[in-house]
Length: 481
Image (cartoon, rainbow, N blue to C red; front, side, top):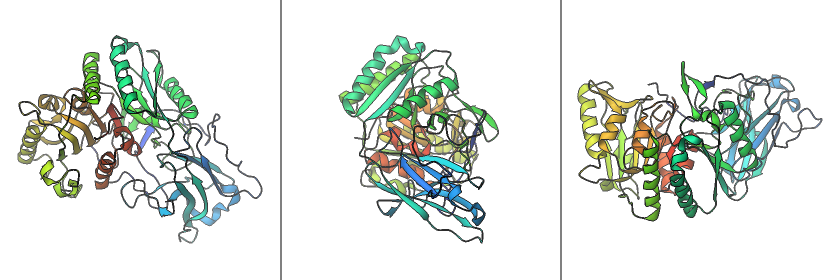
């Protein structure tokens, strides 16, 4: 149940953007640009070429840019490291997540004449971005920002969601169709494209299907809507696990090494959505629950439940950090005070209080938002005592009723296990949607607060977690009212 300290630890000095350190179990192509790359940028190695060029990514002109570094225009021997960073948005230093974190990538090997492409997504529509080279010179001094180019994203475009199913859900097609109709009524600028695939489709074939759609449409969301859809296998710190996040890197091709550090890190260009309910019956009940919410017959109390199972050294946050205008102190329930892991007394007291606040039985208690900060695995999250941890049966027994559940907890959203805690939180209680991590991830105290602020600003839940690689569970288009 490994947990790292920072998800966006990149500094502008080296312009790294480190997210999940996983390796695809696949053959890596020995090229930096996919053969079917639709982006037109100046060819590398041309006389008088600029060292950096950038353009809007086709079909995603409101949110994504493609950059190219041409080392033929520079002397690589002058640098110890060199990379590209999205430096400014409308003239202001650009930090895409918690304060102090930057978006960029650093070249792994400064090969004379080398050509390196990298796309950056999750940008804001209608903004002007200054994209620059940055690095460390041979004398160990910073280059500062140089060779900057400006790119203006277009106004927000109509979005496309892919709903991928196979014959295993054909018996609940009418419920799926009803859900699609309900979502489209609430999201007039959203197209939901149903794609039926064979039960025997492979990871590579499914990836190519998704990528073809991404290259020709403004695809932002991919719903894995049926059981049995294949999941890539990744090396998660020595353990081979299934992980749908490999489907989020669509600008450079499957398994393509683009020459930057951490080539196996996924780019999170789309939100992956799990409909991994334990059965079709439960999925059908869930879809009808969401439809009733859209119709106005289900409501949630404007209350927030924060479940903090981290020790202060790892997460220096308390109840007051989550209080704001939407959720004043009297509308925030908080479970915390863990100072040591695997402490029977603390673990038992925490779980007892959490169960009493989480349950909707008898009390009909509900929350708009449940935020969880805890170490986790594919089967449980902390805290633990001699009786166990917080697992799917614990959650099931509580019958939670939260509109949205956001869990900053490693691996509890993994789709390859039968009893995922996130599946229990969303599908098996009375909740509507959620976000969680499928594998070990890098985080810090600001990630959960950043997602919370995006949700409070009206961002759909799937979009709110996209830049962090969180998988959405259930309906990714839900918003706080």
